[in-house]
Image (cartoon, rainbow, N blue to C red; front, side, top):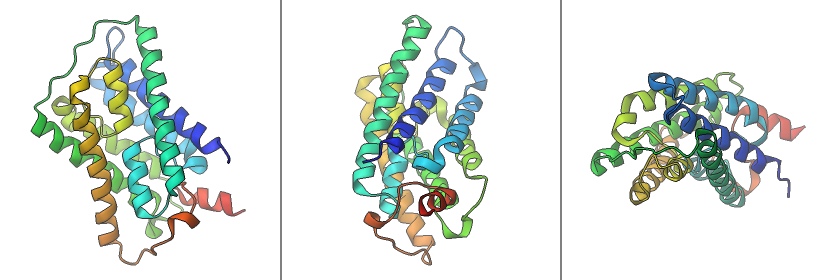
Length: 232
């Protein structure tokens, strides 16, 4: 079994969560510019690793791609494991760099947090499926930019409501860093995975011309270029 895909997923998630913690936690936080840095690092990591693993860096995205039929079950499980490990490692690094500061945990209104986390996890996964797995956008060069901008827009729009995770691995990372309470972790997990599953269902509904490939026969990478790379 080739481990390169899982290593890439670990690295991408690590830098995503490291950037989140580093730009949000004082001292040295980025203030209102934090969402720009977060969207940017996601974009560049997707461009860097997309041709190898697909650049998911998000268990909800992996679930959506699996349900879409573009990721094998074994890869889905191992991707999620790599993403969570990357988030945990990032949390440890950020706390060490910041000197284990006292962090104020968010205290969101649960119904509102569930709603916004579901909506923007849905938006993120919906964008991923359409720009990186759809026949109509095959071979495009903008997939990373579109995905990164979706996260940036979500962070600016509803970050103050829920913390703006849109990603179960990120939720675990910010919980470990003390930015969110452990008691609220379920909010992110339920809403984000539900958003990913809903995005896959809607994608299938509005893209009826897309072939329903067997999950076992398709690579787990997202961008069209990755399919060409594996076909060579």
